[in-house]
Length: 237
Image 1 (cartoon, rainbow, N blue to C red):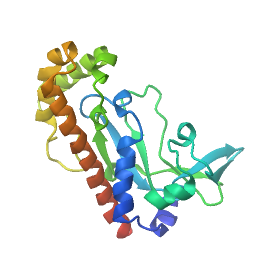
Image 2: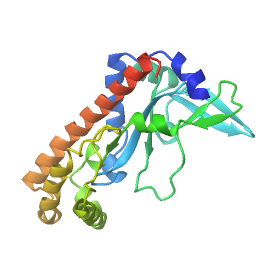
Image 3: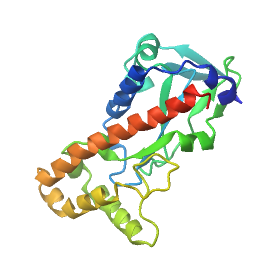
Image 4: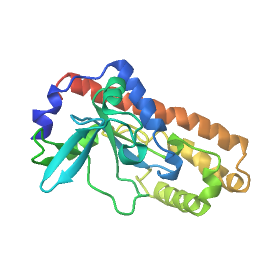
């Protein structure tokens, strides 16, 4: 399998490259537009990719992997060339999965053979081990509440309903695979209590405090997950 054949041979990124990649992921999109407001959020899968920073296109039944000479955010979600990407981040890559905001989700992430003859999906067990769940507060903005008030209320109602079912508190902002209850539960209940005032006045001080705190909580979670994957990577998975 490709992940056995190729991933183990990739050089392990340095701690500096890993920290830079964590910042890159957090800042790569206006996440408040793309992620759910409440847990369980969406799954972010972090993985070593032989073609990190490169482009892939289909030509008939083959896949052509090519170096990006000049970054294009809309094509590659990065303004970096392949050379710059690898220098900054090594072979780190990520994939957003299981996102309720996406109506027609695509399978992924894909890995491609060296000769372009075939591709395969990263195995589900590795996706589960190499992921964490994040919400819109990864990169919030004050206008997020006024831009999507109906969606905010709908997702709040779903969070409340799920939380009230026996043994079904939302599991979200922690590294997947642990059995501990989501530590974000009480934090997001505090947000629920602030919603009526938040929708009426986005400059609510408690709301700002929550937003600022949650940004750093989620950034730290990304870095912790990357470090966990990096340790597995260094030991040959």
